Length: 250
Ligand code: PGA
Image 1: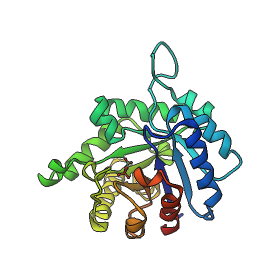
Image 2: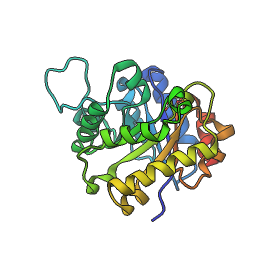
Image 3: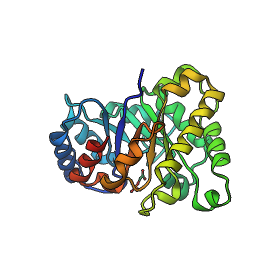
């Protein structure tokens, strides 16, 4: 079965609840494609209002993070069951900004992946190397250790709910984009790793999105790569016009 393209928007810590609902509705109204999945990841406060405003429509809603305990005395955290009850179907895990600013590790990424699956959410696990790591020719080693750490203990049967995002840290919010070839090569490496860690069926079915300064002008080139199954968009997902243009490019 061909892998269904996903276009996901990560709004990060931007937009009030009102702005989020308005943006989501502009995107939903402008969406004409039904052959791909569109996911919006608003801030926590806006998640439920956005999900309610989109209900009955094709646009999916996801969290940007989750804590790995299902409930308890964890002040300030949000759990998988809470996200699910608020209308989320997906959740980002270990975005590079979480790794960079909040000290997240492979170990906590693994706990979050498990927690998401337990809650019936689809984890969208982010991996990617820094500029220094790429320059030192360590990209593959970094991807390997991030993947093996975050997917430790995961059964092949759980992989039908897993989505990966290759997001080179040097391309996020910088205006620098991996070339189409660099993106495809990294995705091919990740897919080969999946085949070794799980099996060929898993490798062929898990979607791998590309993220890092995707915009209307470069989306088609990236999305045309055979190993690229979609995009995770930050800055360009904050305007309905540019996000819809990226969707049109798929
Ligand atoms: P960007 O962010 O598109 O603004 O580079 C991508 C991301 O952080 O997922």
